[in-house]
Amino acid sequence: MPSRVKTLVLFTAHFLTWLIFIFAVGVSCLAFLSQAVRTSARQSIKNNINLLIIGVAYVIVLVMSVALCLKRRFSMFRRLQRISKGHIAIGKGDVPNAVHDFISQEYARTCLVALESLPKEAHQEGWGRPGTKYAGVQFRRSLLDTIPILDGLSRLLIPSQPALRPNDRMLHHHRFIAPLMPKDDDGLSPLHYYDSAIQLARHFDREPTEREYDIGITAANQIKTILYECHLEMYEGSLTDLDRSPSVVS
Image 1 (tube, one colour):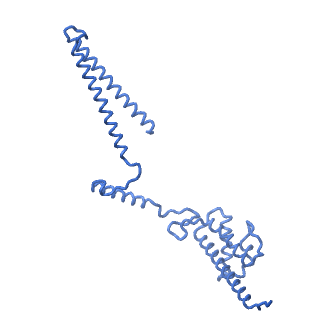
Image 2 (cartoon, rainbow, N blue to C red):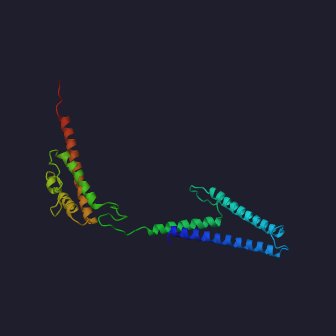
């Protein structure tokens, strides 16, 4: 049942209860007054002490009922005002030990249930599995992010390298640094594996698998390491040549 409908039903029931109660009190008061008139000697309301007693009794009951309701409402309001609006940690001194132990046990049980409810074998295609070294890594995006990084490193060695175009094959774009790459037993260099992984990430509809990503990112790291080493050798060679050059005497 919606909360608004439930509130309306409770309000209607409360109102009807009070209406029936007031109607019953009014009927009983009229019945007593008419009985007092009929049983009096003159059967009149003049100088009828019974009518006065009945009226005063009903007025006293009404005043005491209203006063009791107001007192209860004021007491509840005071108690609610003393409740802190902020979070207060419950210590052993705040509640009885049995209550504190029960709260602690329920809190521990809730934490265990939440821990057991966490997904452990969940796997989303194109993402690293939880608990592995690639956890939280989006394979396609991670592979494509290596393109500008390797392009910038290769330009440190070959500043005149052509500009990178969106659909360039990595083998073609990095053809000038291809001789620097070592080859395996199959005659393939890290640049070949990297080119295949980038082609897959660019053009395939399906997401790269963890195996394909591992091959591609490993090749990218190998290329990055080779470019760093070559750049370092060039820098050290330039310093050596500068030291060996004859000094200019003015």
